[in-house]
Amino acid sequence: MQYNKLGVLGGMGPKATSVFFDKVIDCTDAHKDQEHIDMVILNHATLPDRTKAILENKGHIFLSAIEKDIKLLETAGVANIAIPCNTSHYFYDEMQKMTDINIINMVEETVKEIAKHYGEGSKVGIMATNGTISTGIYEKTCHKYNMTAYLPAEAMQSNIMNIIYHDIKGDSGENAALKVETIIQELVNKEKCDCIILACTELSVVALREEVSRYCVDAMRVLVNKSIELSEKSKITQK
Image (cartoon, rainbow, N blue to C red; front, side, top):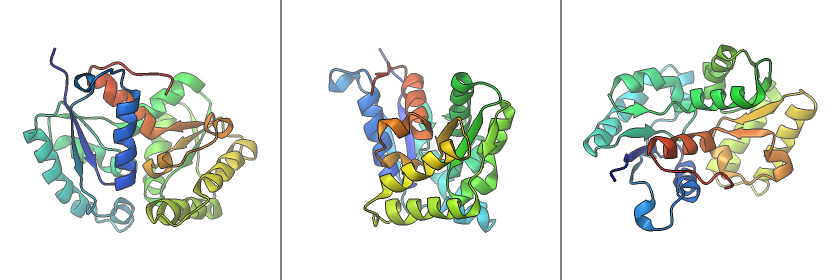
């Protein structure tokens, strides 16, 4: 039986791409090499910073660079493209217009998953980069499903950015998990959020305790599950 090949447009950042790859392998119901998903992974680490491109209104530079990657994946014959980077989804419509290959919309799929489990009227905390926050992509999509998006106050958002860029991307933090958990607990206990979206794939790198992670919906995990589904494979739900 022929299965769908998955294209992965990665490098944003490299650790997040590596975690995505590992999660797809770990969550696919496979018992030998040949039962796993064929993947073509482009780890384009030198792509322009997405947050900077958005905040400085230089999206055309990012799009020009990524179009070449999309064409490479087309040539490789992939059936679907996964992009394990939330901020880049600000450019989703422009990227999808570049190809007839389906690009999985991580933002849409994540919010759809939350709406299914938490329902209308839910209050959803967003943990993301300044770039993702400034675009309003999660906020707008939450409103589409009649849910309220809660955006962190300035001081908390500054802490989130420091964790993402210094502790995780910069590999300089020894207590990244504790810092992330502290913010999640504040969003749940003080701000009364029903759930928290880990809306930056770098946050997926951090191992959280179960009593904290149960409040979270990891956008990368949603992307992993959708990638497996569209590749016509079965998921291992317990991992």
